[in-house]
Image 1 (cartoon, helix red, strand yellow):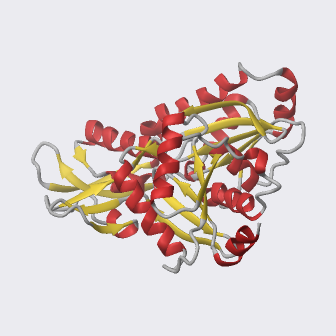
Image 2 (cartoon, rainbow, N blue to C red):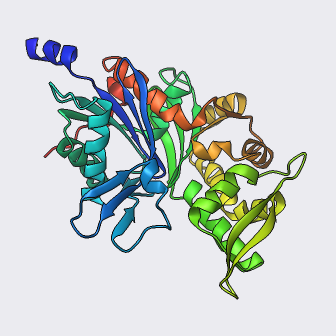
Length: 345
């Protein structure tokens, strides 16, 4: 008991939203201290880290053979155990300002469809990276808490979190996920769809980073009041020379239509497994939209029109999951029941 109290005084417990596109870190009593892309640059000669986060992302598509750019998370789960561990160690040290008197407790947010093997990989990575104890929480639960939904009450709360690698949809009641769906479709698939579309329709080859900029600037899921356009630079796939073409928001919307339809179909599929009482609650309260993908222009209108439900985008959807993690970390005793069961060694 004394040691626990002492640990509470000297450790800086942290929460991590370990995302495919971005990793965010919350420090207890301080707030969000890190928001970086989940990208690592490694030297192919000595396997040492050259850069992490924004600095590494800037190297994408511009790196020589001696530098390898790695995204250690794929579809919301660990794809490269060693690099994830190195990235986590770096983030934990930075969050603690490199002063680790006592190792921190770490809360990590994971997809709802995660397997036992994937849970173990996350836990082991965090432990090896310098954690004293590791807790896991499902993304939809954290998102719902971050959105201030009354998850403790006996009523249906429908939440959709669209991340880089996955879209998590869940109905939550009495602090537990009653029905959920996790599809490996998100912001990354949208970027890939734009790259593919421009290659086929405009004979121009662009990188993923350019596609992401196009999506954020003029991407939409629903017709805009005033359609947009922008100039895009890339490589002509016929001549091989650099070219500039004009791309419209209508074209980008067309390129994203299949991905958007997949997300909406997942919502429809969830209702087929939902009890009538919960469905009645949701018909009244609607769907809460969080995550980076929630920022796609008109996505709320497109979902609302298709499934005939009120759709609400939370303020600051990018950090909603981490806000929920922070609330859990600050009140662990109150939120014990939302944590995933510990994995036995």
